[in-house]
Length: 224
Image (cartoon, rainbow, N blue to C red; front, top):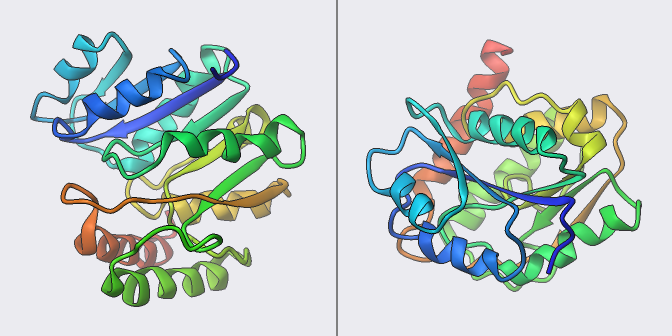
């Protein structure tokens, strides 16, 4: 079981196919689960309520970045000292949570990024790997100065210090770049940890990867 100072934040939009199993698996580790129901029009909120987990809703779909900011603020108010961002689509592996929070528990980092590439466990679709994720790594290094092996993996862990300092204003997928920018801005200590992502039918897919690139460039154009 995880310490009571650890909270798991799950941004969820129309995830009725997956959210139940994700919650069930997480409950084997902790009851500190907070789902941000981001304007879902399906049974996502109902399934959270059936499974007796804390869930709050955005009235409209604002985007993953906005959901994570809401989750960070609520988790801090609930006394979190470590916050884990965990996707609702079932692609992240519960057993990797212990690995991703270890550097925080040992005070070796303020923020830990999960990486699909460090241990090469994730069977990433070829098009997404070479036409979306690899270019995103380069562009994020160009824009932020942080050299990471995986720029847009939503599996990460933040210390209380990092969560208090980082303010996510990018509502969409460009929030990952914004987080990296603020890691550099506030001189936060960071590490990468290898994690396994299992791609399946209901995952983000190629279109989600294209949205990452689109939001990334729009964020630089608008300077939001």
